[in-house]
Amino acid sequence: MQTGTEHAKACTNVYPGRAAVVSWIFFDWAAQPYFTLITTFVFAPYFASFVAPDAASGQALWGFATAAAGLAIALLSPVLGAIADASGRRKPWIAVFGALLVIGSSAMWIGKPGNPDIIPALLLAYAIASVGVEFATVFNNAMMPTLVPPDRIGRLSGTGWATGYVGGILSLVLVLGFLAANAETGRTLFGFTPLFGLDPVMHEGDRITGPLTGLWFIIFVTPMFLFTPDYPAKRPMRAALGEGLRELRESLVSLPKQKSLARFLLANMIYTDGLVSLFTFGGIYAAGTFGWDTIRIGTFGIMLAVAGTFGGWLGGKLDDAFGPKRVITGSLVILLFAIVVILTVNKDSILFIPVAPPVPGAPLFAGAAERAYIVLGCLIGATGAPLQAASRSLLIRLAPKDRIAQYFGLFALTGKVTSFIGPLLIGAITAATASQKYGMAVLVGFFVVGLTLLAKVRG
Image 1 (cartoon, rainbow, N blue to C red):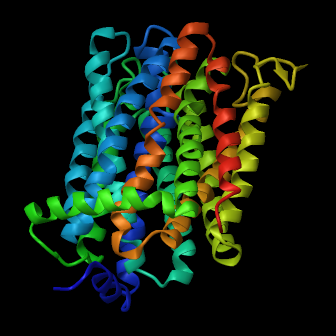
Image 2: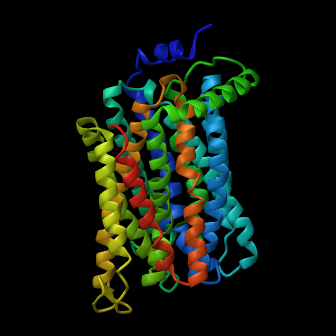
């Protein structure tokens, strides 16, 4: 019988062609609208502003739902990754969890404005979709070592993230330009009436982002299933279950001996939680601070996605040239600077210096504080992409090759085991203080601790 190491070598000695690699990259394109449209720039701010009783309680409720999904992901991801390594297949897992993403996101259409009775079901749908997209990503990431040689992993990872951001941009343009309209004017950002007769008063343009995300995923993940080769099956599922759990126990027992890998996973646990929380609540924070509507938040999202596209592409090149650890460190320093300054920005002040507040009816982002928030947001977008891309690249360099899905499961675990704590802290502090700013301030600690731990990881 072929051992795990022999199997990995057999799979990685010969790499597939360009069509297989490009099709794999399109997974990021397929999944990104979930993060762009639902968790950050359209649906989450809509929920906080129009479904929840008020912005602060909306931020708190969204945080609690994110925490619940994160806990489920944290508990199950290393187990499922170990089973996938033992069974050999990746695509069946991506299909199952991709279906959860499609079902959960599509169900979010039910979130009508001013209807608090629908909040529990809506948050459940959001949690299901979150579990689906995160687990599908675990198994998609695990395919990377079989696609390109080790010296091109950084570029592949960065290109994937950059491509995902382009998909996010186009999905936002589609929503803002053709689907979501201002409730007062009835017109979209491009001055059109919404397609399909979507009602601006009922915020159907915001709610359609759920079904659109599901359809988008189905369309653009299909090339990966058709053209990207999977690992061959190694053993039946029942045998893989026992073998996978045994290997997971062995990995957990041996992890303290792999000090650099253990420190990296711990650092990733901390700084990823900060980054995910920052992206999750950035749109909600802007809606509460500046009163931005969907068009303004979505336009802001397009700017961030453009910055993220450039950052992901450049980060991939820097990764291959200087190593992923340096890319992660530089990204964390910039993120820490940006979040500290953001906490000093109010609609009428920047760095505690008074500025003229936005004037009702003024052009988009006419206020000085709004423009400062946009600049800082673009810094976050430009560094968030290379941070995440270089993190999965560094894991591939540190982890045993024959247990790559298992370690991506642990990678997801470390990215989620406290991700329910981050949103939970934000939600709890926001609810206790009725201040979005105090809730967001906890993110500073995440980046400082993550940066400190990363310094002890060999690059």
